Image (tube, rainbow, N blue to C red; front, side, top):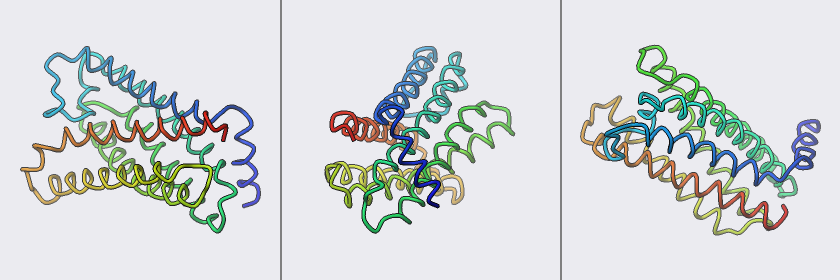
Length: 216
């Protein structure tokens, strides 16, 4: 336990974690943008985010997603390390780190396995759901930790709770469609997925900016 605690604290000595967060966003959005520009007829209200990997620029979506996940792992490790002084929150930090690593690793896997072949599509879909569910967990725990730590503005946590709620709504819609046959939700699911992608990107950028500007 003490070893992992040391690892998290020492990790901060390499480079500002805010850079990792920005790089995660940069690669993710760049891959999405290139794949979108190369996908004729793609519509945000009809096509889910993952459909980008089926277009001519699918490889850019995949590479961008993988690199985004790698830098997200570095970012969350750094961020958790920056909260080492938070009182009475060691267990929350441990669970937050574990759930964040599972979510980010699942993001990398869904980037690697992306396509229309049934087995690949299944791995991609399962990885996406795992990433979403554990994403809700770690973002919510991050928000709780931010509220307990004076280094960060409470407004970041409040926005983060909004992100958690929006992700929860998307996961609920997903289960209603795929497991309960409520087909009407498919009308808003693709757009909701894009909205969640954008607000999660904003949250990463806001936390990254705090880390860099305040030299946390």
